[in-house]
Image (tube, rainbow, N blue to C red; front, side, top):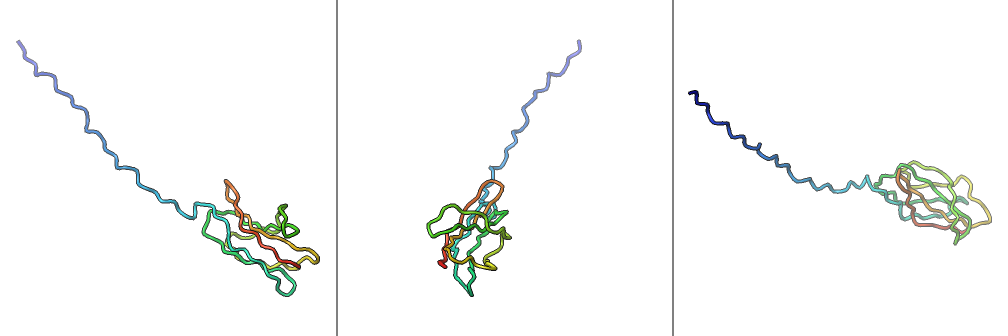
Length: 120
């Protein structure tokens, strides 16, 4: 008779061990952060605004203003480059107080700076 060798033993392959997922720290440029330290002073009859612009994911920066010292109805006033840190009005309005704020936006949300008011 013909003797056949025994069937080979098939072992499962060695398990693949994946390294643990790396800890990824958030990149500050991927977070939307509002400008801060907004101030306004009158200089030669014009309102001059300055602020600190943090590293942020902002894709737009809009200066907004409203009439009065306690106002809340802000309207877009001028769109600025996201790296801008100051703005001077070409002509300041007479006879009213204006309050300003900055709106920084990205594709998901908008955040606002503090407000600043310069009395006329």
